[in-house]
Image (cartoon, rainbow, N blue to C red; front, top):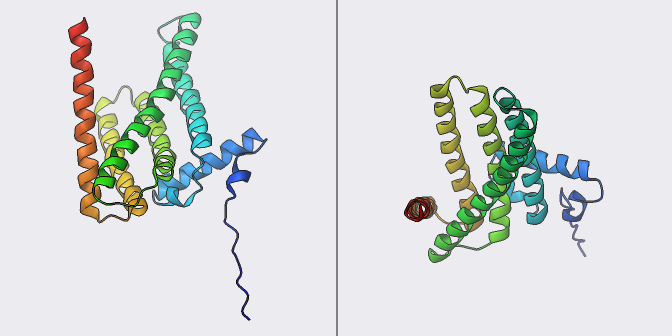
Length: 208
């Protein structure tokens, strides 16, 4: 009788985030770099959404704080820079993952209406792994090319287009929908996002 051999997965979800925090973050960074190079690879990694969110928050906060400190010392005193740096870094580290969660929820909803296979946790985890390094790159570029705004705008546009391309690949692999349905879901999500932003801004102006 033929024996069936079970192959062990490359990554064990329980071993990715153990007691060694430094090793854990390195593993998450490796996953992010792999996802940045090939977005669909993010789907293959175990969906450790809580740990991914935590590490994404820490990395975004650390990078944003460093960038604020570097640029702020040219204008403000030490106390002001540190105070606003911490506040800005915390806000940025909260807003980015929250925005990714909202986008993932909208794509999940529109994909479901089109009869897609559903895995919200895996999709959201993949988005965070893929999009976090893109946000970090965009932040670093905005500081490096501060005096070359036009060049920075071109690079940011390229990053946005690549982000949309990567999101399309991730959604397509998870939902197994045809490309046109995935594109329609992304377009509808973008439209809803713009509407929400406009409504929020309008409400803010009216209250003032």
